[in-house]
Amino acid sequence: MKLKGMIAAAVVAVAATAAFPAEKVKVACIGDSITYGYRLRNRESDAYPARLQKLLDGRFPGEYEVRNFGNPGRGVYLDTMRGKERRGFRFMPEHRAALEWRPDIVICNLGINDMGAEYVKEHTGARPRGQFADEYTALLGDYSKKNPATRFFIWTKFAPLTEKHPSYRNPASMLMQTDLNEVARRVHATGIDMLEPLREKMDETLSVDGVHPDPEGSRMIAEATFKALVSEALPPVTLPADVPDGKREVWLCAGQSNMQKGWGEFCATPAEKDRVACEMARLEKVDIRFWDFNDGSWTKLSPTNALGKCAFGVSFAIRRAETAGKTVVMLYVAAGGAPTESFLSEQTMCAVGRDGRPVYPRLAAIATNRHRLDKNADFPCRWVAMEYPRRRGNATEARWWPVASMYDAGVARLRASGVKIDGILWYQGESNASTCVAPDEPTDAAYQEETLRAVVAELRGGADIPFVMMGLPKMNRPWAAYRAAQKKVCEETGAIYVDAFSAGLGEENDVHPRDKAAFADLAARCLWWEKRSDLFSHQRYK
Image 1 (cartoon, helix red, strand yellow):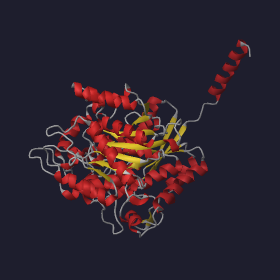
Image 2 (image 1 turned 30 degrees about the horizontal axis):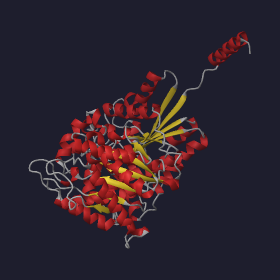
Image 3 (image 1 turned 180 degrees about the horizontal axis):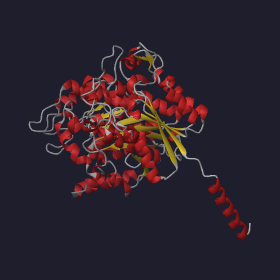
Image 4 (image 1 turned 135 degrees about the vertical axis):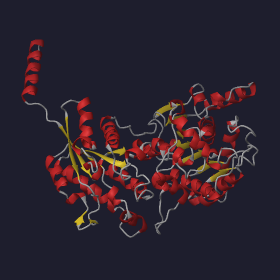
């Protein structure tokens, strides 16, 4: 087409657009009283859907139309009642009205009114397991039938409840996260975390009755929703395509500062420089790939770029590559000071048995407190609690430590991507072994064992794989009880306990031993002997 013809065609296209303006993107907010704007004096302007409309208009003038289809007291279950009325949102006129509008985007916060005794029945056997997820999926499916292109956004973590609410300590909202994430997976929804944005100011913004937000709380909910709408979803984690399954071992390397610190930090003396040079010479002869949870980046390690990576994990990977003759893939999820609770999902911490009682009662108390660790009276390590506010404001510390933060940023992303892990390397415990303040005393033995059992189960994720746990080394700290708990839990779960203390590793006055190669040697040897002993079987790691 000649230039004159191209210009003419463009003019026609612009004229057509002016004559038939594009329809607005229709956003339906469905849900319960929080969506409706219950207790807000000016709900037409202060409920979160109205505030979301203003945010969208500010960024995309005239492009979006948001409507509020909230109905107080509604939920997902079709067989529960609210007085003499059926509670399920699918029975409501708002559901029918939203369907007839054929929205392009559906934002849903249902589930809070289902999370009482009825939901817990799914975990005790009194109600079919999966009923909530099935009925939630069917509800959203109604919208897909009307408009197959509908995009879904659902609250996968509810806004918190304060002490004023009678269900404040109810673990069901944490347990329900498993099913909410399953619903999101089924309908390809984007999950929205409403717990974290409101946790810091929940006592002020939810002060009326402990659950319904004031205008400021609605603003925060709208902002979190807006962020989810306009943000790019993180891409899934994919393993290096040039290394096939049979030619690689994939290790999750998780923990706190002794897993975090790189070889470049241990070059202060000639002896240390020689040690690092030796490790880097060994690295040149093997193939190690490194995934960093902080930015999702992949690196093929070399003597130059490996100096900033975790020294203990890199040296362990070198020894595994030498022994197995395979590429070792390291999935790195670690941060200085991070307590075990940050590696646990809230649903694991709140798990209940068939009797309805918590599997991990001390962890359930921490999770259901809903405050951050620095405000959580149930959290025993006061050093971590005191450090949290400073770390949160310091970007160089990478991650901070509310419950599930490391899990959400790293482990959950790997799990959602379907990454198959062959083993777990765990070097953590200093932040859970003692109070870390004068007088520095051991934490409760039952708490120590709970956290260790929970993290072994969490990181394995039901897979029958080795879990290599580095025992706390020698140091002038009250760690003996925690070492005993580590050994006991490893014996019970089939995890591999690496007894650094008996091997004489560590330094009396430094929480960060500098010779990470010695720790890696011991861990690699323990794994090697464990896998070749007469007692070894595939079931050993369960």
